Image 1 (tube, one colour):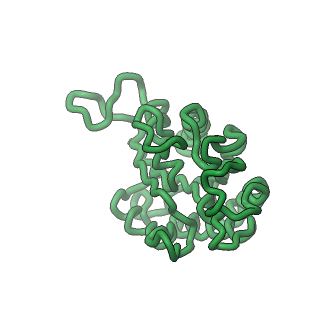
Image 2 (cartoon, rainbow, N blue to C red):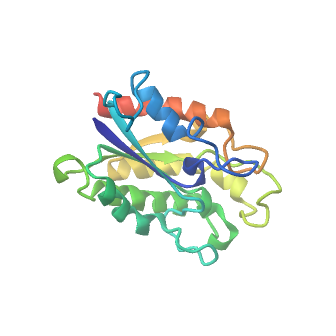
Image 3 (cartoon, rainbow, N blue to C red):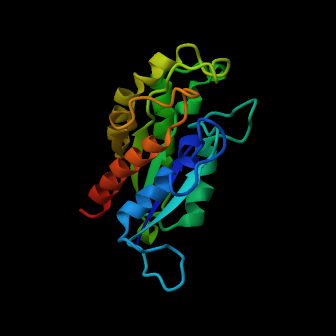
Length: 223
C-alpha cells in the first residue's frame, strides 16, 4: 500500500466558499483516494480489502509556505512540516500545495518569494528521511490555482494578488525542477477560485483537481 500525504491550506482542508467545510465526498484528497483505489474499498472499514493507496489529508486554514503570521499565528507550513511527516511515515509521496495565504497584504508578496517559500517546504520534505526505508519520499509541488477578484477578502489579500497569482506557476515550475520535485499547475484544471469569495474552490473544482492528482500519483508511484 502506497501512502500519500496532501499538505496544504484551506483548499486542502475543504473550506466551502459560502462558509463551513465540504464533507469527505467532495474534498479533493478523499475524492482522489476513491479514484486511486478499487470500487467498494473503504479504508479502515472492517472486512474491507486493503486499499492500494492510503491518502492522508493534512490541510490547515491560513497555512503559509514559511511565513509567521502575526495575526492568525501558528500557520508556518515549513515549521509544522517535519512533525507531521514523522507522524505518518513511511510516506511514498508528499503533495505540497501552499502559497495562497502568502498573498495577504501583511506579507507584501511577490511571485518569486512565494514560490521559493514553497520550494523550502518541498526541500524539507525531500530531505526528511520519511520515505520508505527511511529514504526520500517523492514530492509533488503544486502551484495553487489563481484567485478571483472578490469583496470577501479584499481587506486581507494584497491589492496586487490577482495578478501575482497568475504569475506564480512559472516560478513554481522552476523551483520544482531546481530541487528535484515533480510539478503540477492547479491552474491547468481550475481556471480561478470561486467568485463567491475569490479564494476557495467550488465542489466541481475539488472533483476536477482530484482527477488530475490521481493521474499524477499514478504516474509518480506506479511507474
